Image (cartoon, rainbow, N blue to C red):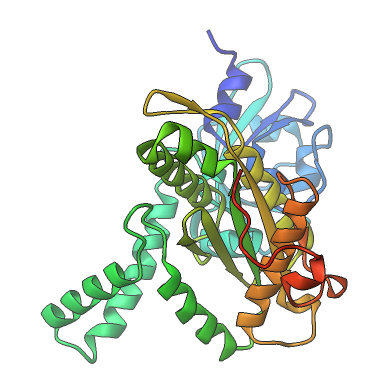
Length: 338
């Protein structure tokens, strides 16, 4: 049978295990995204501040709160609050099962949290989606008849969606480039090609190739934020537009996770399939202000540089790469994903 600590790691990404001395023994995996140093081994009450119903000053006082729901916050990130159920672990320690409560919207936006940072049974991502959808519907109702508006939205959604993967298509990307050009939002653009995809299509058939593309779409959704634009630009080419995300460490983490997951062997239509991915990144904040279409070209140049460097990696665009593929001494035609 699975050990209790391993079970907590698997199903509760926001738990805290506290030993009899009041020191943190174990944290859920999502705490690594919250911008604090790993507090394992530190006193719980030095890391967290309990706001109510009471403020215990010792481990015995914390154990007395077993069965109660606390309001608490990280001392290093006091703007983000938590709700936590206190559970007696029966060995003189306690377990806190935490959630963000009403602070979840701020937490998701601030720390770039995704569905993987919440328990699989947690409805928080669905609730955020419903909240956004409700706001959009209310705004639209002021100007359009409900039935006509619904039909128009359905038609527009279909026109902007890739039929195979359910991601956005090139038309949606073009619209996003226009909107970014009209705003002051900083952003990053990730251009991604699949490595060895052509071999899959040629040797295993297009049905398996389509299965590969659908699997990649699932991986993209699992690692990106709700506001990110996910595009299948054509064939095995994908684009991710990340508004407000310009930190190179976070973009490196995102790219590394995508490449790692996509490169994992998979069984598709009964066939063992192994592909890879290469990513080029352009960050608007890193260069003199230029239009998004140029940034998209920069990301493509960085992608070619990643492929030339051996594939299965990511590269950030820099001025020494130039603005076109010719400066990389590469053929102008698109490389086959072999």
